[in-house]
Amino acid sequence: MDKKIQMVDLHGQYLKIKPEVDRGIQEVIDTCAFINGPQVKEFAEKLKEYSGAKHVITCANGTDALQIALMALDLKPGDEVIVPAFTYVASAEVIGLLGLTPVMVDVDPETFNVTAGNIKNAISPRTRAIIPVHLFGQSCDMEPIMKLAKENSLYVIEDNAQAIGSVYTFSDGTKRHTGTIGTIGCTSFFPSKNLGCYGDGGAIFTNDDTLAEKLHMIANHGQKIKYHHSVIGCNSRLDTIQAVVLNAKLPHLDEYCAARKAAADYYTEHLKNVKGILVPGELPASTHVYHQYTLRVLDGRRDELKEFLASKGIPAMIYYPLPLQRQEAFRHITRAAESLGISQQLADSVLSLPIHTELTHDQQDIIIAAVKEFFNM
Ligand SMILES: *Cc1c(COP(=O)(O)O)cnc(C)c1O
Image (spheres, rainbow, N blue to C red):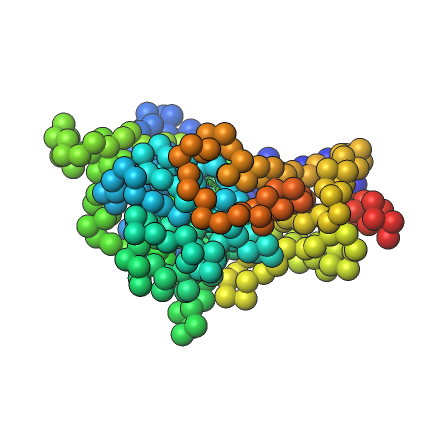
């Protein structure tokens, strides 16, 4: 064992695509095409092809993607948007920012994802949209969610920041990439995401021509013709330098996902029988691209296990320590539809182990042995 164990190893991954990345970045500098260089359009085209979405609109980050998506739907203050309580804050933050009301719902404890069952009870006459979050790398069970949305005339905005590359299979056999199933899909290219650039970046997916035009306009100061602003928009662009990195990485995305899945399978094989933890559950209808490999630690021993691992030089992270209903910022604007007990329970018990494309079996063996040692196995 030579290399220090890290939660992610972006440098190791970079070394494998270094010539292409270095050359591409130098070219952007030489041509000074920092904003809207041809590489940005090239990436949007390639991502369209990869995902099967009819339209891809690139933007500055995943949070902007969600905000722009909500802005395109002409919602009114007080309209309700359903969001899982167990997620990263961005999924709900944009709802509050636009003067809409986030309605938090609980999630399934085994997949960490929101289900149609969770959503159903939260629908009120003011509900206009649902934001299913494909947490930790696998799709929510989208078929029943889409059916429920259709029955209630609700928009569906997929938060696909953690699951790009994952594929959902409908009961008739139709396969769709996550992010291309709902009304609009949003993703993030934050460096540690499964398709990460070397700074901030994001993208929006839709199969709707009218919405695509609107999303483009909103991301670009509400203009279609330069200096003619027909709606209030924002300034949200993907940098050309980031597009270079993404162009180099996109052809490897499936391979990156497969490496993460193989690492996850290795963990599960060796940890599934350890008493005191539960390994993550997989939804049969979705592939899992393991943005995170997240255990549930039983008997209130999560923090103790985290410290034990740290004492052996093994990092582990808590995603997320507070469910949304416990976040101060949301206290006054939210309507909680139910008790949200599962989200609280998860926040108290989850622990994510290192997982990335460069993780070796030797490193995993050390991590697995340490977990087993903690539980006296
Ligand atoms: C990372 C992330 C976002 C936000 O992406 P940024 O690019 O950091 O703005 C949104 N939702 C989820 C679930 C995320 O993990």
